[in-house]
Length: 196
Length: 250
Image (cartoon, rainbow over all chains, first blue to last red; front, side, top):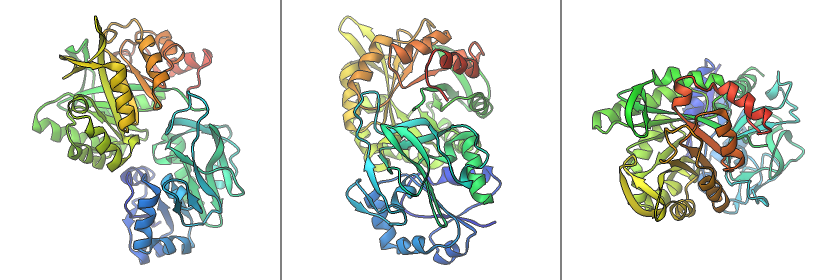
């Protein structure tokens, strides 16, 4: 199986590569259009700021390429947020794969820090991405912006309010948490994505 | 609900884990990757690896170790020790670290916090503070606790927060190695004045100490070394205990 990871100006890509290696897959990190189109699976990961990453994608015409992909695609963290319509982070228009807008956490309680950093549970899971999950599992999060629940929500997490832990539409999947850092639970989610 | 985190800390010298008691007298506690994996399997939420080697050769060995940790460990890990400039941060993040912890360098040149936050994001920037109660109140110390500064713990923590730190790792030198509990009052003050998570460090001896750091100290995470390294507290047992005490843990 050929797994391609979208190469762009986001950080923390190597941890996704390492996680795939642990799952027995050697991914290709690339911005080559042909390789991305041909791959069996595409992963769109990273940490970064919405506006600078979106500008980079447009300049390199990766925005239209990602939208036109037909194989299963998995967005992770900023990848998921960029797949939405718009982000409050620097008022950025995004890829509009998911018809929903990204918001900033506005805590009303002192205990809720921003960014949310650490392990929280995913509930109401409804997708083959979470095959084999029979109870709420903890996954690792680091983020200041979130996707509200919507028609595409396939898992929710509660922080400040319930929000989308994961999204699915057609061949596009996305998770706000970091499966590559979520221990054995995260590895199961990655395997489910590769197996589906 | 966001879980309270349990973080074992591994001090690394020449590729091996060591632990200082009150910052002096080191005892060996094994292979860093084996130990990290064992902690991860037991349910540790994150790991911290501190490089206590000073030499250039040691730095290189540590960077290689970071690469191996990143390949083998599937939970987040922070690295610290000897980070003085942005290029050190870049080198360690490139090797696969999730976060870096800066201490003396941040007090010497606070702009380093802003630089890390703007280049790599606040989430990678842990500001570690070693502090001790003096007649003037809580004072910050440099160089592994050897050099006293004029800086007040609470003012410095707030400044680090405002400059873009992602977390504060507060070690009470008065409590470290004594095993009689964390500095809960100071922790609670930090928790109420900061908008970022606080990691409690120094003083873990019994499981109740962790409970108190979370309940009385309002800490978001608790870090310890020797109680884990020498098997005095098992992480699984600790989490079972905390769960029974009504604390949300993974």
